[in-house]
Image 1 (cartoon, rainbow, N blue to C red):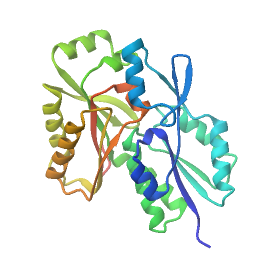
Image 2 (cartoon, one colour):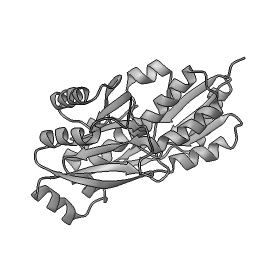
Image 3 (cartoon, rainbow, N blue to C red):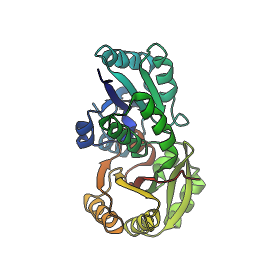
Image 4 (tube, rainbow, N blue to C red):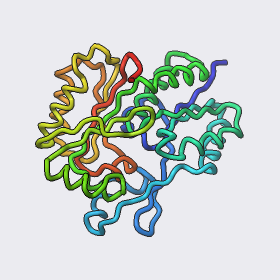
Length: 286
């Protein structure tokens, strides 16, 4: 009897409905606190609600990790159905979601919790790769081992139009935000080793900056796995998103190009008008 493997992830992976349905991926959402109410990421709250609330009240939400009890209920449901569960989380350096999952998994023999060392579709790339491995007939232990190697090859970055949300959330000083806005700087935030940091600062209008950023990210594409690429945004103009998708297609022959919308966790940190191009390289990033 072949091993039944379920691929699952937290809601920060920002996968679209098409991919979730195609691979039968299960998603366990993080919590979102806004004002005096508790919400569930992607269930009863979305980024546009957060933006509207901020514009009216000047308050940003706080996101909360998946707790151990919710993990245990989730793992029990699927292990009782005979599945081996491989669960992928946002970077352990960014949230206690991973640690809580590991604690919960200790009560089960056939549950694996994998740290993507990333966020948004940077983690989503690893989740989809794992789902492909299931289709290829690999065992759970093989998939976990391969994905732990793969995480270091994920190239995840975003360009942010405004530092307002980062400043409001305490992740950027007032002076830095003022200087960036005054000079029309657009920071590029990259994920390396499970942490985020500014790797470059662009200057100019957002649309033009994005085209330069995409060209620099893809380069000659010689070290990129051409299986798929994500263009992930946090509320950008649809026409601009379409332009960037076409730009990506013109620069490299990816087999799959997915346009996705960042969920509440990423959106509440970076704000509207944030866009990234995310893919897997053939070698680990330095």
